[in-house]
Image 1: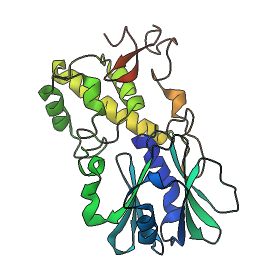
Image 2: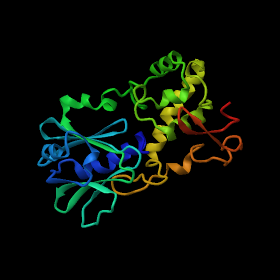
Image 3: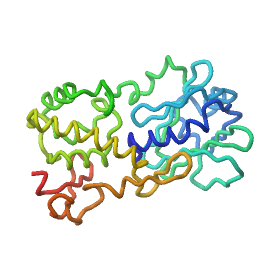
Length: 274
């Protein structure tokens, strides 16, 4: 699933290709991906509009169009958004085609068809609950050490569940949460309120580190993720625990294990994260 680093890399790879381009038309092959308004109204709202700016908030891509209209995309598990400038054929997973003129297209493809698209004025973004209620992101001033310690000390649930809660911290997902806890040597089953100030500080630094590293490495590609030009990321080559069940811990050599925590498959080192 694309997380903050992957969505940010997609944004960066598409900025120069999309900003300033006009949407000449939209072909919607799978209408149920349009969550607001209807597919017909969606086409009417975005057709003829120019893409003024491409932004990101958490795992959402936000295309600012003319007249304060917003086109919002959440890729979910397997969504892909990419730009083509030739007669490249689409595959059976391509569900929405934005015609940008001069043979250029922005394609939305999705193997599991779980992604969501919205079109609405900026004043109505409150309709997207996950976007409107999102907590501060790592690597921002709002995501301060004081804020994070306050979260940790006030909650009795498991620390992994806290880190995955988008209302508390925006953009984190399973991969980068597992990695941050491994770097900070925190057991994902621990109650958040059991962490002392030193441990919370260590985890805070690890969260920022894994997000920054993920961006610097172009994101993590296991199967579906590609940037907006079709390029894979390389961060999978640097992971400490995620996807490494049975392989030796890079710190102590103990085999990495996998268990269910907060309803998610969780990779960890049973020695370093006791």
